[in-house]
Image (cartoon, rainbow, N blue to C red; front, side, top):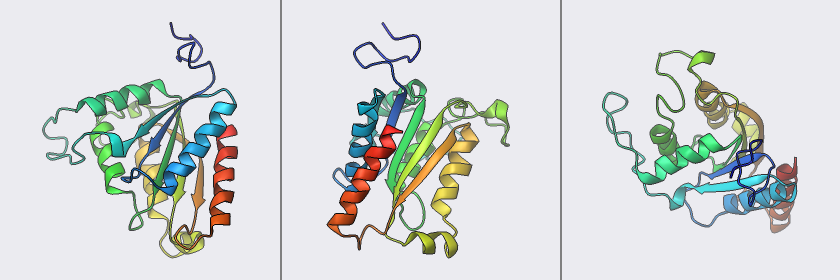
Length: 204
């Protein structure tokens, strides 16, 4: 029987319901290390954490006909939608690729965040169209580009896409965005410091 306050089962606990979405196509990466550290911190505070690793899901990331024709959702996407409905707080962990989102993560949004699930297709943003309203999110993002350069020269396109045109459009309020960069030139000492930072982020 689920806890009426949290929606979690008694075996899971009664803390905040958190779904962690690992948006990297790799099965082993620094993003995984950051996500696992965040998970450790969150669970230490009694939060109920589930994980969704896109690299382990089986689905076609291409929306072949846009919204003009229906495209049946694979089992893994249906399960992902159920997990998103369950969660109160969504944590996305992913690398920036070519200034934007990894293709796998972008394809996941194309396929899973469909009209009728994430928003109403009225062609404009309005609170009544935001079907995931009430949920919050948090972004843990790795980059090889120095943050100052990414913001001031490139305009941080990946961040604006996630926070404004995807999450906010569906009613999800992003609470925090943490950059870990530049990863490629970082030392082992720096990476361990970032891991400790991720643990603390999970505890908040």
